[in-house]
Length: 324
Image: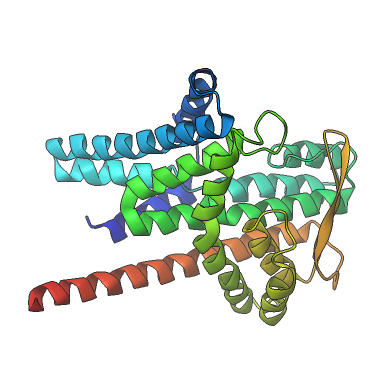
């Protein structure tokens, strides 16, 4: 089975079963490895930034070598075994099903009029304080979560899977996990987490810039606001604190005709985020479902584009080798 079919099988598997909690997940192992390495690296290397760089190199290389080794061992048994392992490894790096499942749980609670349950559900997927959010605040948090997570949870791992197979996808997931573990700006991690944060920004740079325009294309297919999506992307895409996450959020806000950003609280601290988008319609629970619909179509467009480019490049490479 070539890589194209492995990626397609992994996407289908994720859409069908998601991430069962009972299933051991490589990302959890990556996170534990990163946390385990932190103390000895800080002790051995006095310069915090250097210690963080070494930690990042160790974790990312370990993830890549481990995946390569698993596939190599599986291939020694049988080529089919190697295909199965490759599909399973790529599948673990994608989170489309889980993003939809968690956000739909928020929608169902809002639709049932259970605001307290909706707050609890959205607290599972966002870092902000949710105890005092109203219905619009809960819906906004869920929409922002899905819009921001489309890149690091869906399109970026697929980008690296298309580029470098299961090894590339898992190395990307290691980078993303390191950023989630160390990429903070507090006193503890401002220097140690520098490498993790910068490498995550670099890894997401191209995937985010391919994904955001495709959100407008998905909006066109769904009869939403494609022109508004591209306009808000250009105008507001760089207002976000992240150089990448704001692009997909702006494109989504434009596609749905809503405004994201604004006031949030984190650990009791007030944070006024830049407004992204225009409040053509007030944000409501149904926008969570609309966001998921855009997400699924964006996934399909990204996959079609990425695999088409891969097949084209491979064909050109094959012809060049034949004629060389």
